[in-house]
Image (cartoon, rainbow, N blue to C red; front, side, top):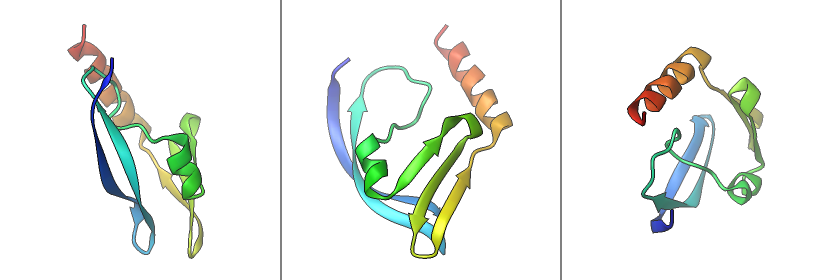
Length: 88
């Protein structure tokens, strides 16, 4: 699938005061996906962030030090299975 458009958005990671904001470009694709958005590795590198998929966790650096965003496994699993059913 080829990109249909691009958009530059302000993204906020975390909840203030434990947050960090940055602008990044998203590519819009016309195809089914299990995900709402993908972050480029360079976008994460620019804000000193990294992803730990096994733990549904993102860690990032802000003015107050290292911060953590935790996903919720039960909700993630429900959303994943609901999306799979939609495309069967």
